[in-house]
Figure 1 (cartoon, rainbow over the protein chains, first blue to last red):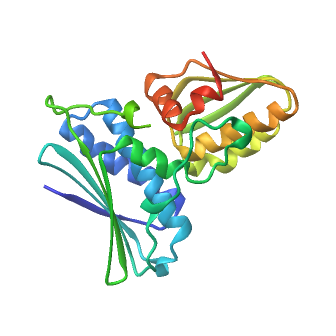
Figure 2: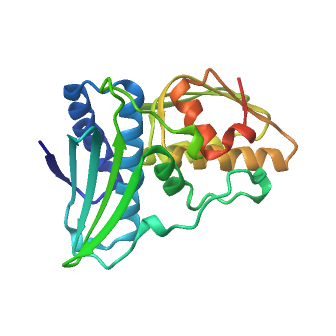
Length: 148
Length: 94
């Protein structure tokens, strides 16, 4: 079953976002490591939408579901121009500190933490979906170090 | 809940969840630190890229002035995020 809730277009709504996702994770028995990853990914996508989409003041919708051995998270932003965050330039994490720039790190981490990130744009609504496979015991599937 | 406490001129303790909504407060406190710095993560449960950005900017500024920044008592989850960001090579973590 998919759970859906809409949140105000402001960074201050993050606390409500975390409560919503945390309650879902608790009901599903997700461990702390998986909950960390879900909330991290949601924050990155949500704050990007707040910062870079105009959205005409409409709320951002978040949907979460567990199905087919994975957890799926969708963020939908209505009445916005097309903007695909999944095409952000790759970040070279091996660069020394003096050559690093902060931009793009959030999406790099999102891609590193989940198995699939997809973007759709239709009828002036953008939807970013992330999916993360659950381990056979149904609990945690934390960040994947080998994909960094 | 997030708390940032400046314990002395060299030490800051972070507690709770360091997300994007806490960035302005954290920037203000970290911006006041001008010497070698230890950041205690013992009670920090979560950090996002916004938090990482504050820490990175501080590390860079201090390093340019010949100082070092140390992060101590890092939880396994947060250590993994640092590794994914490549920050485990940039920060001195204990």
